[in-house]
Length: 126
Image 1 (cartoon, rainbow, N blue to C red):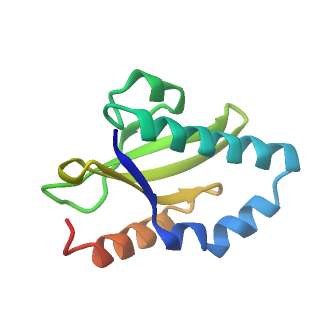
Image 2: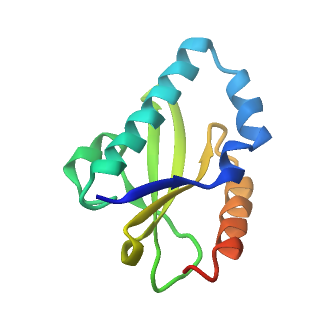
Image 3: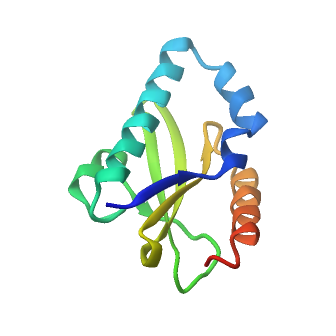
């Protein structure tokens, strides 16, 4: 079973906090619950995109920075009316999954910046 780690900058992102504050409380709870369930499922999965237990989040390949050791995946959080995204990096040699970015407002530029910063900071590892 893989280890699931969160990239600290993701959790401290003010844009996420600001965007979430605009949502109704019920929607925030739905997103937080979906993210918590995803993290639990990732901890028990056999593979971050192929494991059937993850299908409810519609995993798909994400085009992150190229690396021989890391693959990128995007998950959909929430429900059909309230969508958010989580981007993870899967490091199979170390059996580790990193939660790298998340967005409610689909700010692709901001996601890209967070992913590039993560890649720079973990360059020696990958």
